[in-house]
Length: 220
Image (cartoon, rainbow, N blue to C red; front, side, top):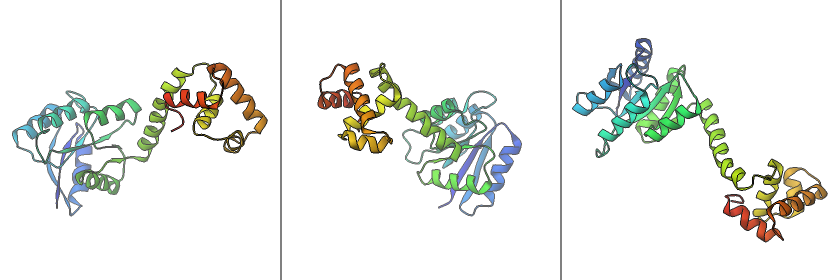
């Protein structure tokens, strides 16, 4: 099946590059181009453009690509063949990527990708998958790891980072010897960490500590 690609970007050279990559791929075809978010939303709403994948820039002349994506997805929410949005932007900032995903985007590539990578991304998104540039995927992993750490730090503000690591392993049921191997520490050092954790949490034993830890999301 041939996937129809609609490009929304204010830069003519970028649109030309996408057009060339699409025209060189046997299973892709151009559905149209737009320079602004409003133009794209209206074209898709009125049926003047029928697309499987919308290539969206983050910064458009009249609005953000985030706003345009929300509008496109909202307009087509009841349609079985609603277009899927793939961001191709010059920025890979965490907030921009997360906002794009929350708006409903299926992927995020950084401008400058080779034509082959762009075509693979278009095919993946057209078939219902998700795709990210390597740099974006790495940043997302760090971002969500940090987000996961926030409630743990809030729950145990008196614990050091090492003590939270030890508590996590206690909550997983590991003995002091196993924890020592995992963290490459001596058993004596682990015992000292465990004792300090118990004192700071005001718990009497490993069971109480594990229950507190699991309630905060550790030990999973």
